[in-house]
Image (spheres, one colour):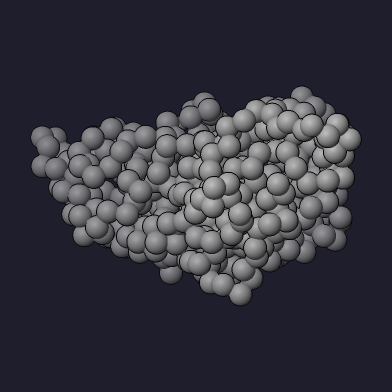
Length: 422
């Protein structure tokens, strides 16, 4: 059975319809209405010649689930529809997808340009693993588009972007940097995890390859790991070959959970980002908050660019607390409607400092070099009632101010102007 040939495309349908039906209008065994979990490791053939043709890709079918699997194929088809891509390749985790695509398209003697404050795991690949391969890595100030263009103009094989960035929520001008990359023939890769396909479609902006940590908003329930890479079939064939040989394939049960999660993505994100906007606006008025990072704020340095390339501002915000980590350790345990955990994109609200979430792999010195201070807190806003989330945050700040010895901090913070990160 060739899932890709059977899957119906819905280019005319709105995104809220495509998250439900995309990639799933296929004939399942027993006329099942839901994608079945095909747990077989291998697929047998009585006709040895046909088996060989399927193995060579001359005929449709499945051979071995490390290479392809019917359940995983449905997920890949769904992402193709959401990102308007020709092809997609699913991986066992988001980091497997990121490392897989970078190792597919970079080799000894080549050069990659990216931004300094990408996700901590991605930064480790740039700082630690790619240099071991003899890849020249140049990381630029994320907010300095001129510096990025200058480094791209010197020549590079890959430009890697993440926008909005994790956890500082900086916005990268995709169109501008794609134009610079194309002038030197560079491949452009973009991590679209924070924005999701509902808010941003990098392929439509000229990007060649899009990466998602499906663990986050796509699955939406904090119960599965996965990653997906999307792009032209000519590029995905190379990524698929790398995955097949290196083995970081997605298992069918995880694929099923991600498929199920995607069906409610539009509903979830609508509530989440409305609440995120509310919380960000409140945090701008809170005296104990030094800096607020959310692209939906008009004063955010990347707000105009976000408006030009995004249809929504997402469900992630971050803020820096006056007093640094000591204030963080007091505030977070006071929250009632929140997990304190290293994940994001789930239906429950999740808070956490960068040192135990996005940049847990980095040392204090490395985080400081990346411009990530110890008082920074990332909040992934869930689907709870917005009024409850706001009241929860307000009572936590009020409780800190009522603690003995905190009056001085309150006075100090009240005199501090609220900034928005550049």
